[in-house]
Image 1 (cartoon, rainbow, N blue to C red):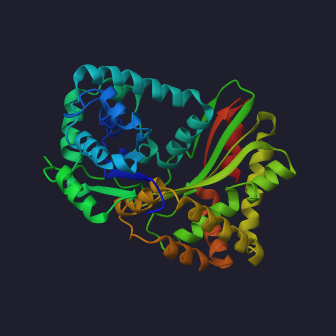
Image 2 (cartoon, rainbow, N blue to C red; image 1 turned 90 degrees about the horizontal axis):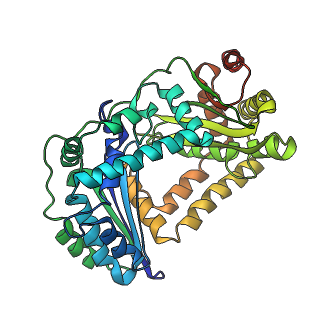
Length: 406
């Protein structure tokens, strides 16, 4: 990317919470935190932070269900030193026991924070309702019990088994020369060797968890609700149709949910939809926050929007608009070095065929209104519908009855 003055790099390691047993729940996330606490060449968290932030750069990471990613973005003249840091963090973390105990408390605070924020809690409850005790139904950060009792030996052993060169993808974009990058990466990662047997990904369940609801009654002014159904896996040929269905339903201010529930009826301040796609399954859902007194009206109107998508084909005018929305968002993100690095890294790490931006834009253009209507009918079925709720309520049975009667 010769027009930019930055370099963004990332390492995607194919391990996350779907690779953990119940006893190990949260170990991938704990390990991600610990890699920032010191490595052989940069022994303290401050050393690591100064190496990147001291040059105006950014350093971060995230743990997901299927991979963990580490990110650095710096000015182009600092990229080689940053690469050396990233390689050292990944291969040679200190995992000091005193630092580990301090970080354990930080992670427990993080877990408790998620439970204190209704928007985050309703998401956790929705995953439980959809996936039950499968790893997809657990919080990525783990449970209070597992994190509290996780010994240092488990983190060290998990790192040896999981952080493997054959299970990792390095990605870099920006003001770089490809030949120079190859040599630098070879020097930084060449000695990397795996140890032990790699963990396996736990398959998604092929059934809906029972009961299909998770409800937590709390005194508050606002009600938070999430409806979700099982959806398509990441590699599915209908993935572009699903992306447009989601955009049409609940992405942005022009979406049907936003226009009907917020603009026309004033039912909800926050309303939208989402798609999560995994190796072998996925989820499609709607989330919203509303006045608790208008909860059931909000739920009914949400279902009415779905009925409209199922009963009537999308007009060519609306379909064209939503295609341009989806393509435009992708095009805008392609100008940032971190977005470009992520584009390629995520595709390779997730096992999909790496496609260029133009190939994806062309695939979006092939979707027709029949594809969108077919998916709306196929996926959003009452017998597969799950519900999560956080907020005030006179009786939990009211929501259960609404769900079962849909």
